[in-house]
Structures are given as structure tokens and as C-alpha cells.
Length: 274
Image (cartoon, rainbow, N blue to C red):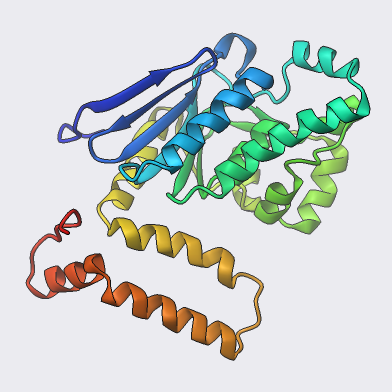
């Protein structure tokens, strides 16, 4: 952050993650088990889901950064957790998988923009987290792998988000080969938005977050929300009508009026004005 960034106003620490919100509306969640490469277990899944839901319900949060401590972003499933799952019944496995599915859905459907800062390896479910974020910036050292088939498993719960991110064709390769690919290849596939040098990762992520918070808070959320409503839809009369209604609503909103007025009057908008 630059020197003008306000100090943290709220901070929470859990066993597996840490989370904070700054005065300017930038929230950060850090996967915080570097000794096991931030691998998934039922505790991490529960804590991360709960924290995402709390941030999503907080109007002060304007953008969310998801990052990780240590060398790895996330190694996917924790070995001890996998050992326990091996003794689960099918119904127990189904219930357990639904919790992971809820985590991915919660992250994907966040109202505010989300940014993944990928400093190192992202395997299995770690790739899912990256795919669920709106923007993903990776260091040049990051590597990726959809490794499930090596264990006789499949990337099922994360598949809707990964396929949406990298496409059907690439998914057909990487789901079944379990081969590793680097950050440059991840960028070519569309999984990553940008590849940067290791020591520039945080600065680049923070710069994007600050660009976002300088825009109209309501407009940012509406702009993100409209994407899922128009993607892969026929450009027909109902769609044209829906988009016209959306812009009409935003133009007539308090923040819409304030933004246009500020532009015409050559001043900074007061987004907090009611």
C-alpha cells in the first residue's frame, strides 16, 4: 500500500486463516498454514466460508484480496483430512463435499470484486479458489496443477469454476493429465489475469484494489453482477430491455447522480453522501 492508505479498522484471526478490513474498504483474507502449504481440511473450509459470508454482508467491504502465507498458495486437500475421508461412507463424503461446494460458491458469488494473489503453488482445490476469484495475479514462481486424478479422484466440485475460467478444451487436457503448468501458461489459459515478478506481487494486487475502491461502490457491485446476467445469453429484446433498466436504475441512484455531477463539476465524488 502507499503511505496514504489508512490503518486497519478491524482484524480477525482464526486457526487456519487471518482476516482484516482497512478503513478504505479493502478486505484481506490470508490462508495461514504455511507449514502444510495451506492445504484444505474441514476447519479451513468452515472458517473461510464463514469469513467470506461475514465480509459479503458488510457494506464497508469494497474489494476482497485472497492471499496465502508461505511458499504455497494452497496444496489442495490436506493429507490427514484425506485419510479421514477414506473411511467415510458415501453419504458422509457427499455431506463433506457439499461444504467445499458451498465455499467455492460463496467466493464466486461475492458481491464485491475479488482478487487472488498467487505467490506459489496452487494445486487441486487451490486452483478452484483462484478460478472463483474475479481477478488473479500470479508471481512468476507460481505453478498450477489439477492433480486429483493422480489420486484416483476428480476435480468435481471446482469444475464449474475452472471450466468457466480456462474453457472446455483446456479442461479436457488438464483434468485428465494432472500435469503441472506455470504462471505463463495459466495466463494463456485465462486462469491468471497477469504474471508479475515475485517482489512486485503485493504492489500489483494492491494497485488494482485501490483502482477499484476509487470507483462508485454501488456501480462496481452492479457492474460485476451484470456479467453473469448477460454471459452466453442471446442479445434479444428481453436482454436489451434488462440492460436498459439496469442503467436507468443506476443513473437515477444517488451515487449515479453524484458521480456524473462530480465529473461535470471537475471534483472528486463523495460516494458516502446520502
